[in-house]
Image (cartoon, rainbow over all chains, first blue to last red; front, side, top):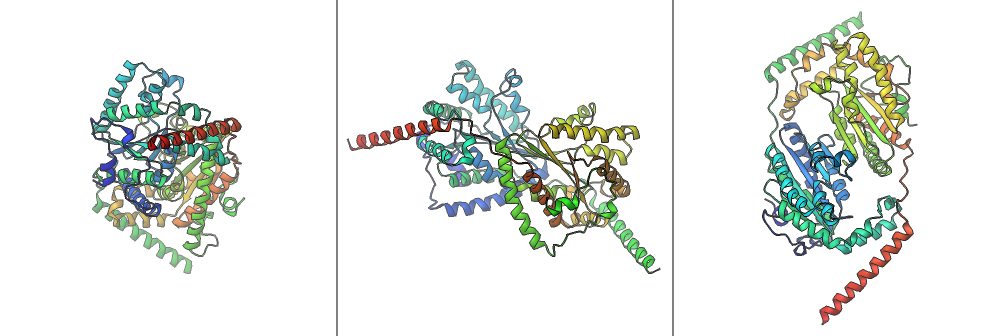
Length: 291
Length: 291
């Protein structure tokens, strides 16, 4: 198990206090360069493993990405998951539920887009919103919320039981970093469309969000579906942590290429017949051309 | 319009004869190196345009990939589309229809996975199988087939009418190249799982497949959804052609970043308030620390 995995995992039944996690943490990496180099190497290995997972077609991987606004979910996807073959890799975003979705339980729309065998699926936000934003804004009663943590754990166990590996990343920035990122967006016209009228009002709920995350991480980090707290003030380090844990996870899956579905000997025989047919045909055409 | 686009497009109402397209064509490119360099440059531009398309959220792009077995659909996806951000790019494979799917019209399952606004979707095989494999093996009556070309054209017009740009690529290899690729797979154990017991039997229908493609290309290359014949014996050139046409297509879409959805002046005011609050807080903490 690599040290990233070990350091940032939330062990089951831990009472998480996010104040103990430094969003500026970069382990012993002195500079960005070393981090970027390792990330590039990881990306190559991840791409190979993804290819094998897709070929194997027996297991799947679900990645849950959660963060406060400007926490870096999009950036993580573009830097870590862009290395993947889009065939077999899918990003699923969750917006405000539609009317039909609201008329079902909160896991209904999620279940419909769960990974198929062979797939890697990234949830950009997820069913955890039902215990984060809905907790902070009291859209759900305490009893409902209480039930949801249990329902989430059971849902994740269901997926895990049928061959889906699950890893969940909370990208941890602090309140100052969020403000810096908001201000940076204001200076870059190509980012203006990303600015939401909710950005500043939601900052008032910062402490409540942190508390909601702490409860979710404490109650829903399980063996079947562990949470990781990723220091995310430094984007390069955030990407590196996610890629390291991803790599470790894929390696732990013991992916095996499937046995050939055909009789190879028979196929070789057919190929030989075809090759000789091809040679004959070429000879015939040559002779014909000469007259 | 770049020369690739112009040269390989099937103009509407053309009677296509694939014998006139050389699968070995590499235009005036002398070597692979120049091709790979241009491909890398294209990929960077495509990635930027994809990002803008996603941000804009008003149009979408549908790419249809069709070819005979070993024609290079998977390879094209991995080399051209891997450059994209998986967020906003989706690959849709079409396998043999399930029982539920069979109990609907042939476009039903396709419509369900059509691109959302902002998305680029690649169909790895497509509804064209209904006039290719189903024509060759006579799974559909002549009258049914006849109707399907029209239904396809109308379906594509429907999508185009609501903001979906459509480009369709037929990857053109010859029968010898297919055999070379089959034989190569036999030599690479990691490719063995890809070998199908259908490979050699289906080769017997080569001419019928070519004819089915010719009819589909002739009847379904429209202004709204043009077909392109891509010389595909040389993988690097195939990738280059697809990327050039893709780039041309994205550039023709006049993608515009959306206007900010918030009052920027008001947002700047809120940011200023937050920044001063942050400064005060830091000062307070410093004073407190000094006692």
